[in-house]
Image (cartoon, rainbow, N blue to C red; front, side):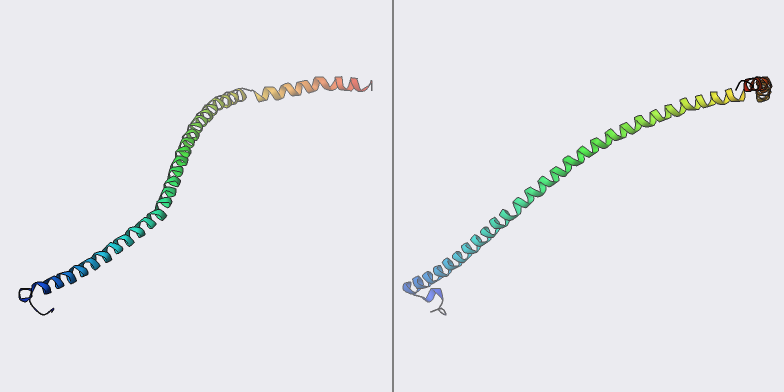
Length: 137
């Protein structure tokens, strides 16, 4: 029957061919429906596995971002403290440089020859007193 043209077939033969064709189409539709259902189930399972991991990863990213923001704030505070410390050290160096300069001026103004002469004169005066004090021991 499959080699006759549709125009040469009788009504009964045409109905039989139509039913066969509909059964083939119905089978194809069932296979397509089951395949689509299988893809849908696979997609749902994949999403059930992937979505929690994505949410977990996003939580970790959020936590890392929050921690990074905290560290940046801490670093800014530390940099401000370092700036203050450097300013204080600079002030200290300037003040100590002035003090050391004044001390050097004071040392340079000392007449060491006169100081040595004064020490020798004092030694000459104290020597007789020391001898006198030894007598009472």
